[in-house]
Length: 386
Image 1 (cartoon, one colour):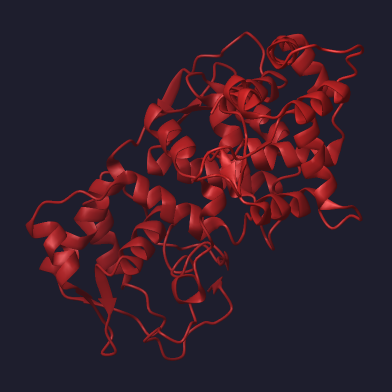
Image 2: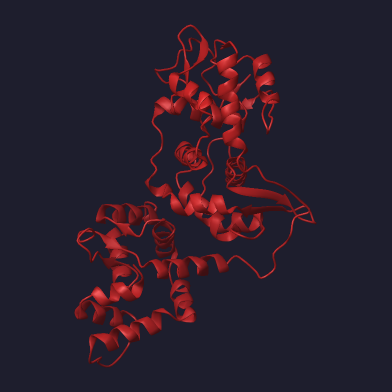
């Protein structure tokens, strides 16, 4: 619901509390007059921008966690969880943040039979606040790239090529659980977006069950195929296509791109717990325009923490690269060599249509390379490529 509808359902005592929170003096003689007064105030861009400017750091984080969520209706438990996350371990009462939003008319108790025990954010107000958040970082000038990469639709096609490869070839595994390099090279040559087997020594862990064995893009394809049950790793040390995987190929079914995006959100939640906030920032800043990565870096500062061998900057670039592989954005280079990104319409639909906040991280069976379901015996358990 929009704010006008929610105000209409609100009783006059609550309307007066909202009025007092904004410092309006004097009495209002009717509910309709009170609603018009509040709508006039809340509808003014300058007033709304001033209210956001006055928010402290914790209040701003709470707004990001709540308003960046694609859902409009929340339980008290969900609100409390977001409020505690906004506090970041600092002392404070999470309920106070919720009361603050209720008093400002930015959050309302549910009004329908379905939402009676829930709380609702006005959709139009949320959209206006999110635009104001984005405008803080954007200027009127949009830089056009001299070249860019667009991989829309390519990942799902290469998933099918991988399944086809397993269907028509014997694919043995090393004692570490990896496809032999000669088979990897043959497979990658068949891909629309080819990669090379992992060669460089270094740490590789935290971004998937087989991430330490394969390059980034194929690691996602492989883990997704395993998660969906399209392939199985047999005790004898071979990869086989399951009945479900064979059906995908025989029926010429293309995997929905949004399902791989959803899986990626869940897979990367462990190294980047606030990934839903990060992807929403990317969408707000780069939908329909080319935006420098440096701008996005400033916006997401504080939402990405270093993860073992990864810095905040390298994690952001990893996120952007994987979103490009998924087809959610394009990556380009400006005239001066600066990195640019552009969120595609399909990517915008995924980010706003899938609430990453409700997508829980995957359990160890699908993230830990050394979980009990692995047929691997021995091998390197450190996550280091030797």
